[in-house]
Amino acid sequence: MPLSEQEQRLLDEMERHLMQNDADVVSAPAGDRALSYRNLVYGAVLLLAGLGGLIAGVVVGDVLGIVIGVVAFVAMLGGVMLAVTPVRRTSVEPAAPAREKASSSRASFMDRMNDRWDRRHEER
Image 1: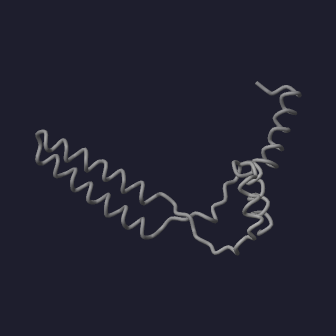
Image 2: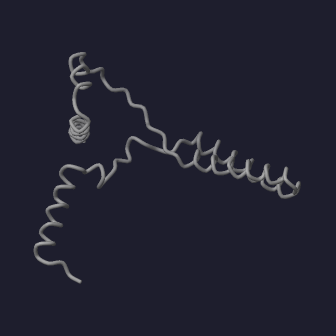
């Protein structure tokens, strides 16, 4: 069912508003987060250890085997989460003046987010 003229106009207006004010939602920057090679390796090792524990739990059987299997599954899940979680890249930023820091603590959340958005676009 096609949209009415008024609905289409409202949708276009909402899209423009979203692009102007909430561009973080539309296109999240990928520049400040990346996968860590160290976390990938540790996650893979934890995943393999969990897989080994899961096999050991099946071999042992009984109640102890169930406990070993559950712990191994949690270890595998933790390994995957560790491997795929991006880490924030650290960048050295020049120190801001003390007056700016004091005023930013009093600024509202949205003001701080808008300032960050403006700084991000100025850097590009």
